Length: 116
Length: 113
Image (cartoon, rainbow over all chains, first blue to last red):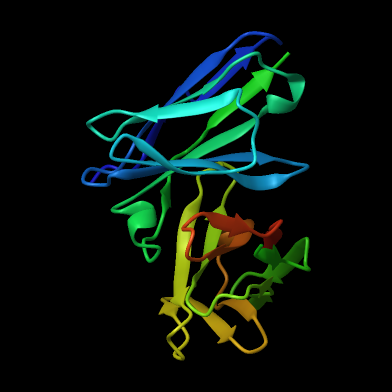
């Protein structure tokens, strides 16, 4: 079974621009979560989507948003990019996500975003 | 809010030897799950092992095992017969009723040949 895939793997943007990252979950998985990883803050939860609905959200400004499609693929959007948004963005998928907190999350390879 | 602490920023081990990585956590929940994830230089986060808090038996996956002490809120990872491919950043993570993972800061493991 194919793992979680994320595109693009690397991205360079300038301040003020916006960016969209994509995540395709493991086949059959309906929950997708997003995490931001930076050297200073470590790994932080952004949000979780299940059946096209955002079910949980971390402490990030409204510039960070996402959506999920009927095939469970998810996109994350960051508007008005700031230098501090430079990070590795990881997406994770699971079968039922927050419907059952017992699920294990499986991660994709990440998208490395650099903001200049 | 839950917190996860990894007190060892870096550890090193000789190939074929055993190493233990430490993790403590704080929570008021009684049901939760604990994980160790490995992140090699490729940056792919790979699941190493999972422990259910309601299980007293420590989880084991081949060369990897945990020492779960619920009362002490401690969750250490033991890697036996260390291999060069084990070199990576190791993250301890907590998953409670709100499902989201809370990670420690990580321990960088170096394996010396």
